[in-house]
Length: 332
Image (cartoon, rainbow, N blue to C red; front, side, top):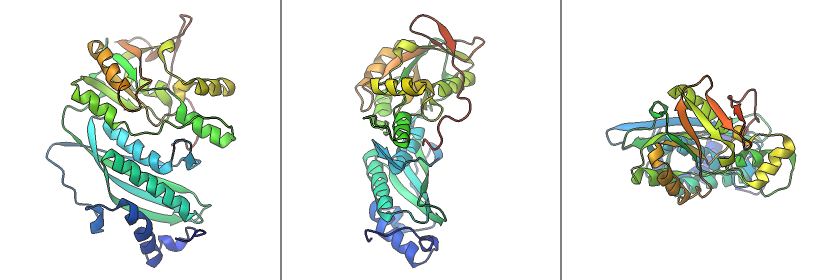
């Protein structure tokens, strides 16, 4: 690939340019025993039992940011969606929509990032597709994932009054990172984009009874907790002083009038466990990769007239509703 090569409409034609793109980039970095067969569909060896299947699309702007890029985001986002259902991720498919004019060097960096993240996660990319459209050099990625469920799946219907709520780390980093890039604000805020497999597997191995688990992405923690409270017919009571937010992110939010509870994350989970398991589960998460800032932030109670409340540092209480309107376009 030459230094100045760009994506052209010919790369989406299905002809020689398409074949060269596949061989020189996609197959070069994604090759494995399943993908190497280059069939119209991947044939997978799935043991009998339950599987989890999910799909997501990624349209983040900018495509490169502190702590990651759209490729890493696409892999981690889909794998984490499988994890929080109690599945062990195994396979991914990848669909690329490329705009004419995209720099092939940028595309290669994104593909390398995806390949490295998948390899580190123990996952194979087994199928893919590429389309080229008119545009100004952008990229959109869809990833679908399959995971194996070897135990009782996590589900929000399991959440009961008395359960404890744990968040795996500081909130708002991804949202603040992306917005800083867009506004050309110089700081050291890095996206929390990460695969959380070690953390979840450590909880399962320790026989923690996980009631429910969710990936805290668009809409933020407040929106996710509202969804869980509605699904389980309970009320979730947050304690503001327990919610972890990094000092630089807090300062950023204070300046712009943002609330970390509604900001997107790409490497955080919220976990519901029984009160008896709470401290043990917290210790396991804190001693897992990416979990050192985890905290118990809430408890579940019988359903009241609201879904989610937060007790402030001065003892007041406010209602947390779901995110209204648009938080930030193309955040993930």
